[in-house]
Image (cartoon, rainbow, N blue to C red; front, side, top):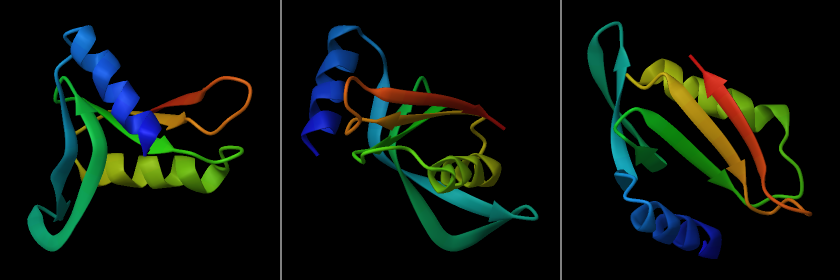
Length: 95
């Protein structure tokens, strides 16, 4: 995704620490599951960025991010739609 690559460049230029394609453990009642979630980007070890390139964000994308937050130790998620016109569509979600 070209938008993801350009976002990574901007994060680096601003000295914002991030990990791309970070594999996250999924816990259920304190036990680790075999299933893993791959986060698009995790910044500062505490903000999950989920990137989309669609015409419009729909509730299922917000539910997806909230689900990932509930399964992880991360409390804040940012849903970014790079395909929205005009401009970028952004939603902040908190566990």
